[in-house]
Image (spheres, rainbow, N blue to C red):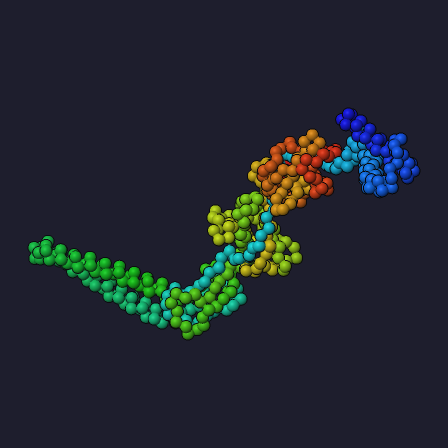
Length: 418
């Protein structure tokens, strides 16, 4: 490199001497002791002289600039590069459990809701409740015309009385024939025939008893009662309607509400029974806290979500079945995973990165983000425990392969926040 500098330096010096000589020589003076040619000859040679002059000027200018650039010592350039390095903070990647937060829309539903119809067909003669009425368990809701069922019961009871009389008569006849057989007055065949008739009569009594029981039950079913305490939320028929299996009223269990949340399959942390739910609604002054009770094992094919349910206790009685709420689900990782500060993650073009520090140089590494807290992020891939990553406000300004100065490094705790 020294030889190249010497010949460039000599060339510049020669060009400068030539330029000074051309400027100092009078017009028409002999050059190098030679005779000056005639005017016509000088006129033809004027362009050549001008070109030499222009070349000398350009060479001198280049030499002056190059001289200044070459005059900068290597030590000064190193100091300039050092002053331009980014000063960064770093953190050590450690294993920990991060309590992830999943936000999803959800609905409030009643734990039990029943459309109640008549158990026996007939004409609706009375509805004892209406929309909004609170009812106790076992309270009457509506009544079917009982007259046909009262007549059926009376007929069954009459048939039972007849069957019992016939059975008693058959039994007495069989007993009398048995005494005659002992006296050899009646034959055994006649006695056996009477015994069979007595058995048939007893079976007829049992049949009629079952018929009476069924008639009594049908008559009782003409009055329909509430299976549990709740509130009437819908009334579909009025008196005079002929009913089959159609529901007359809809009963909703009061004070037993549930929240139903559809959790995306792509959620970073799976939800399990016992996880905490925080419910936000416009009608609530403060969020309600609930607990996940049941988690579906099936992913819905059309929405790619799975359903969870949790019991809701609303002391203000503000929420109603069908209310819309925004649910926050808090679920911690089951196993410790690499954890970094939130400021270490750079999101760009739909992907996430961190800058790993190695020997004063940062390397941009793609990562996959898992659960997130306010100031910590769980990484599912890309780094390992013990790695050093850049953190702080300097992260968005870093580029892959950049030399950096490192500030004192804090230690990131691996324990999950309570």
